[in-house]
Image (cartoon, rainbow, N blue to C red; front, side, top):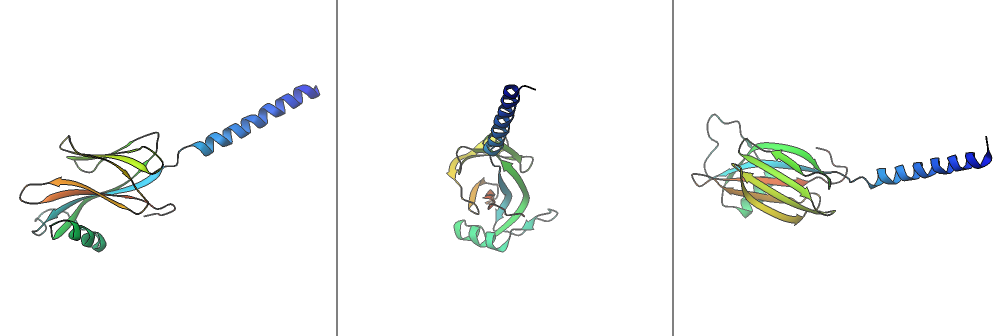
Length: 156
């Protein structure tokens, strides 16, 4: 084999290796989110419904901000978000959440209730920070979606 051909092939191979490493390193890092659909009320848990009380620290946080005394979790879902793909998460048959990454730490969050956009919010979100979105419900109740960005390396 000719030395020139061999060196050309070796150089092309090394360039391919370096390019593939750079493209793999440049792939966007997925951010892991958790979302909880919560119902707030001043009454008790309705009979026949499989609702769980929220965690005590979340109960305390929501109680300081909102007027309701009881908060129950309807649903909890975890999902990834990357700059390449928005996450669309059905929290219930009437509640949908869409999260789009805009920059490294800025996200657009859209919350839909019964197919209608209830809230659109752009926000910088730090790992561990809570974002609360929601709306009114009948009989002086409310529903919320509490969104959290997982800390790097954190597993639930």
